Image (cartoon, rainbow, N blue to C red; front, side):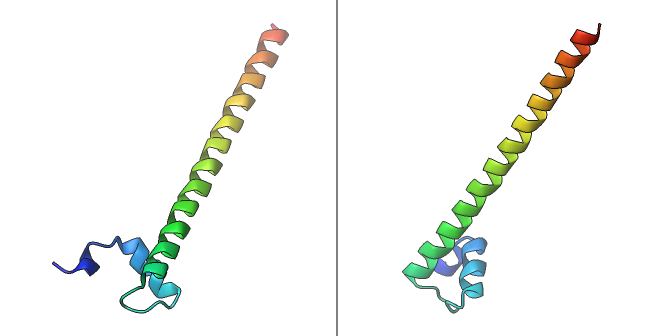
Length: 69
């Protein structure tokens, strides 16, 4: 089995977008992995921030409801 089929598709796609050719170099693979994992980190951070915002908003609504009773 060729090493090409062992490399994740995301890495190959990113490498081809960056113009690193059909067989990306070690630098190209490293760059593609960095872009992938930084992107995942940004996505997860945004998702956690959204969840925290929702929890705080619900907490504030519960406090307002208790004060009005």
